[in-house]
Length: 527
Image (cartoon, rainbow, N blue to C red; front, side):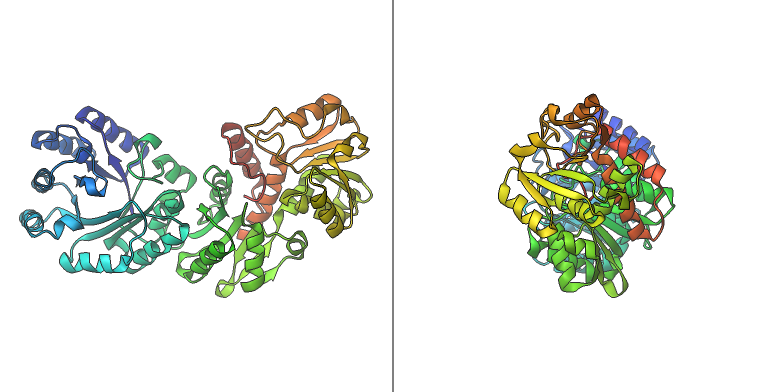
């Protein structure tokens, strides 16, 4: 099994004991006693702390970290060595010793002698790099196992890019439960979850966000509830949201809730991919070269939807015609022989949201007069669907050239945003970010231009009810909020990922509840 270990990092015994109790209540499977955090640390305090931790019945790691590798209180080498030796005598299940110190003969020999006298305690040899990846990660593990074959070898390093994580995955694939490999930072978050799939000895989580002992450490609640850590095994398939940023996206919450409702052994991850086409391509090349990771599909959001289309065109098997017309892919599915297929579910999600609210079929959009505000990515997806259905679309945009280019591409009309005062549309669609949190007091058009006969569709879903939608309601117009578009496109993605119909009641409930309870990064659609 892969233990879900919680670091205990109180500055005194009282706070340590409180953290131990909270960790047990939250579902910790192992405790790491970070004794270097304790002020005035001595043998008596260590004995009391270990005794308190043993009462939980959980396995215990005792760590007294060197300040050069992230330790606190700048303890000298003699004190740290004695704490580890005493922890062995007190029957700690494991001690964690920095490999750099273990290689020093006097330090290492003392640890070996203590372990020889109490074979109940196991040794973790660890190496840390808070500045970036190790140059040759595999050789570090080989050296650790050479110097102490019975050790559990651990490396933790800062992932500057998500592509830095694949070296850690390769280590876990090679050594499994004999190894711990953690990538720190936001781009390394996925390494903490995927560790269980690859049978790592442990991964870390904190009880509270402010109690984390490393960058990117998730809370136990998030690990267990959002990412269903307890259900991950070597058969688990992974999906995820590729974007930048992704930290506050609701995608993992929503998709994982739907997977859980259908009892599917699938987990959806946040995949922070920085950079442009080169970095995006490298990420997918890394994924497809490692079929054993079992990544089976991705949602793609800003700024990578065009990159996803180009990758699929170069290396994919099939691209949906709608995605080609829109010029963007928001869904990638990995199939046989790691070949990719590309889709765009934003268009279908938007059309479903609009037609369901209007109580009509898509074909009944034919000849409907539509005003589309904006000429960006969201506009492309929606205009493609409207034009395909035969609607008469006019694009209004502050940058006239963009409106002209988009109108030419989709063979519809364009106008300067100033001309919106003459609007006679039956359907008004806001595809701009105006009104999005935190600037929620803004609306893309003056309220006097909204008529009771209109249907007003705002693709912004943060907040759920924008100023534009409130003004439309006051004018007596029918309204469609952006969450309906999100729900529609997510449902299509679920079906592409699983070949099953999405549990719509779960999708809708979780989406609305989550949107009510958290603020999001400014991506409106696609994950």
